[in-house]
Image 1 (tube, chains in turn green, brown):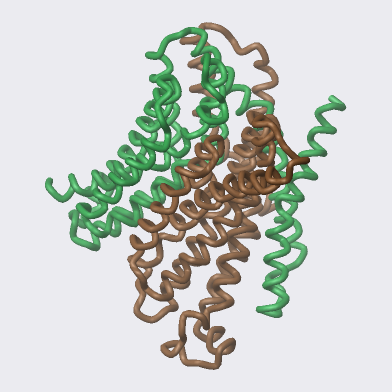
Image 2 (cartoon, rainbow over the protein chains, first blue to last red):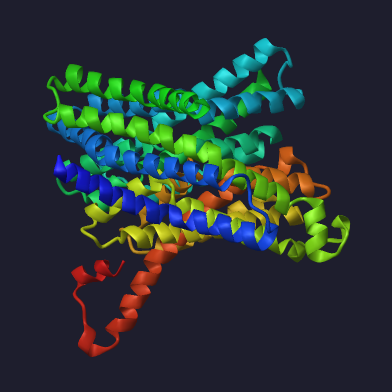
Length: 247
Length: 272
């Protein structure tokens, strides 16, 4: 108990250091540029205390749960020696964490609006909803596929740069073919899929897998899953836009 | 009272986000692996902390940082403010008259990245896995510098109206070149850092900056020019981390030329 309290206090100190740059930047700009206080000082301090407590708890929970769970499952699956279940797990983790992602739901609704304004789809509520759902499924599918490819890459010891660089080459190609209004959404969807809960789990999965396979280096082979997860959504959404044009 | 109601709402939202993942993980462990995790109690406590932490974190951001950041982005791109700082009409402004915008973009990109929980997690992992060779703060500062430069350059693009894909294609060309020359062990982490850097804290703020800027600058549309800052931030994070790896190697090579400080191949990686 005492040990965990010390750990929690250490995390709180770390969080304070992590947040210091933001506090400094905001204060300096307020004082130098705007020369006026923004809202009540007390409210600001209260909000900052919430951010500090939140970050501290999250980091603490990360060490207790997210990292051990991700790595534990990776070790167990590697021991089981079943590529099939590993692939199923990777896909479900990617698909499941993305489909319910709030940032993605927001972006999909916005994209439907943009597409309706550009006359790419019918402006009726029904077809806009269908478009947004289609987009969400597309991105979730993309992240699921990304983790499957990433996990197979770790098992097969394939080169990461070859995949990522040719992937972005493909993105450039698709950008040329896709309708203009989907391009921005596509590029943004790569960024929203990697949420705060998913990233530690996926990182732990990769590192755990690479460290339980013989001849793999957790540093060079374990990382890279996030890179796939931010690449494939761009590709899939561009392809979705191209297909929408034809139907 | 109001705060308590909001806090409960945020904690509930956070639980709705995290619980399905937790249930899936436990079900998979139980049904496929066929055993309970040894440290089940610890993991349950950990998940409670993750839910509470995420909820409080977002609540605090929503009450302070996000409104402040949005307000500052609006004020900096406000025609009245731009007139006051340059004494020119908005249509006569050259790209360098927006210096406060660039400064703010650099500073806010850098500062928010350091507070990004996902980046903290990845840096912790990279530090342990590399046996300390990759420095926890070194990596995060490298990513933060990249995001700052990316957001600053993205603002320059919105102001000048240059096409997005010139920068993106050029940036990826640089990444390819760097991949060839950078030390092998930094490459996967560098590729990951793009996606990791653009997350909970960074994205809402830089999106607000992009939208405010594209509305203020004559001839830009929020729809076509407002996006793209996130892509810039992610791309420059990758470039910056690769450069960080290359710098460590260069520093090592430089000290190798002095005979008395010869390092073994193994120590070489510790320079990161």
